[in-house]
Every structure is written in structure tokens, then in C-alpha cells.
Length: 124
Image (cartoon, rainbow, N blue to C red; front, side, top):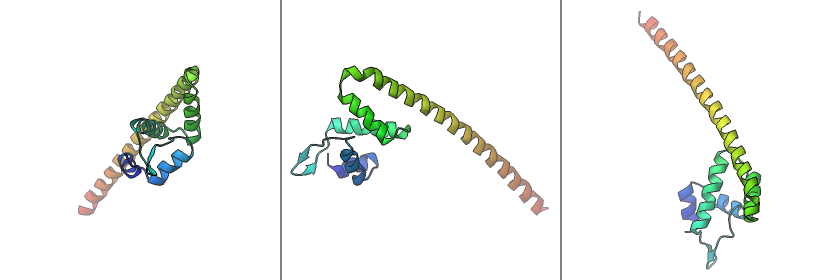
């Protein structure tokens, strides 16, 4: 799959994909006549990168994870710990976001009530 198609599919820019490759997060990407040709394994890696990035991992942390992944099965305990820690942190952020959403909903309800009261008063 060409870089433009990958960028569209994952809603990324082509410079972002090239940057990920430069940083060693992706690749090396196979090339056909100088044009990047993303393979299923590359897309699987990109899925992982996007997932953990959304969960708050930095590119440096992702790079470290990929580096130890490439070292083989001896790093399974460390990889498991990294992902478990990230999941814990993500759940904490999820709970904080849920609290913030609840608070916003309450404020919206308060303001809507004020608006209704103001409109009722203005009509009389």
C-alpha cells in the first residue's frame, strides 16, 4: 500500500509517516521503484503506534517498547509491565475525563435552566 493510501486510512499526514520511519518506529518500509510499499506487518505496527499514542505514550516510550520488542522474547516481562502501566494510566485518565464530562453536563444544565428562567421572565 502506498504512503498516501496509508495516510488516508489512518488519518495521518505523509510527513508524519515519514517521521515515524525516520525515528525507527516504522520500517524499514519496503520500496518498489523508490516508492514506499507498506506491508500488512507495517500496518499492524502503525495500528499499535496509534493505539498507544492515543493512550498517552510518548514517541520516545513507543520507540523504547519497539526496541525491546525487537530484542526478542527475553523482553516479554518488561513489555508486559510497560503495557500494564500504560493501561493503568489510561484508566485513570479515562476516569478523570468521565468526571470532567459529568461536571460539564451539570454546568450546561445549570446554564440552560438560567436561560429558561430568563426567557420566562422576559416574556412576562
